[in-house]
Image (cartoon, rainbow, N blue to C red; front, side):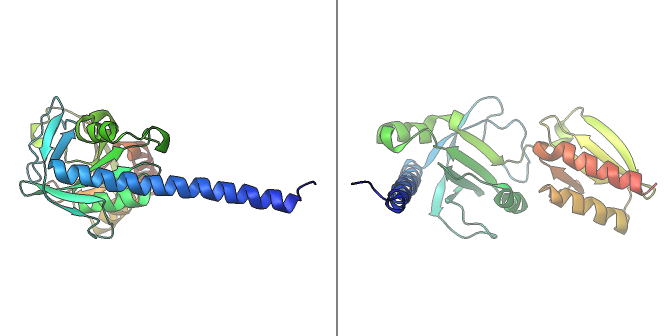
Length: 242
């Protein structure tokens, strides 16, 4: 007897559906396990942060990984348009933790996290497949392995303590706009003299690349990933105003 192509196709789709279901189920289990580990440990080792924003302090070492103590850890608590996996507090400073296996923080969510301005750490658990899942290994990695962690939002900005950084001045509608490349790679954008039209142009470009407004320094900070794109758009705006 020869199987019909329709039967083969149905078998193929059923097989693929089962594979997807297994991945989704494993990711759910991994998420729940990671959240429980962090809750029960009350903290974890995190990557160092070179610069700190004094208004958003964390007790982190600037040269080597630090142990971050977390209290009052909540799971999936809605916050400003996002639902983080966890949010805890180090002293009085909130920290968001995102646990990733197959789905990582994308551009849209990153923009919302930037707008929130809350320290956010992502833990990459993609190497822990269902076939090699060992609870002790995963627990050890979640708590002590900094190589699988990265800061998505961190306040590495103490501009008054930074000695030097590259600055470029462009002119939009006769108004100077300062473009400063900070030592850790981000771009600081500042309209030197207030002008409603120019301010609106700069704001639109900064927000296009998930920039965050710094009220204390009256400037926009754009992540280094978008630095060149933001610069190009600002220079295009300057050229069109000539």
